[in-house]
Amino acid sequence: MAENAKKQVPLRLSPKLYDALARWAEDDFRSLNGQIEYLLTECVKQRKKNGKYVGEDIDAPLDLDIP
Image: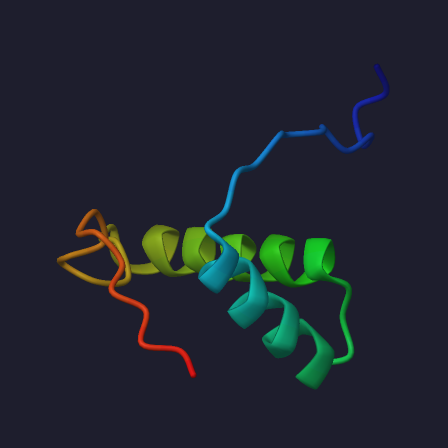
């Protein structure tokens, strides 16, 4: 595989999280896949910057109160 070829990763999301990400992606004029890649990239950059995760409770279960 070429060095710059993108890897495919199967991802399972709850319906609420999927819908929230899809709306966010639409607001930012990105595809859902592009939005997820953007968010993951930003988290990795943040971790490299300060050596910590974005939040102390990153592994806590999500409680999405999405209308």
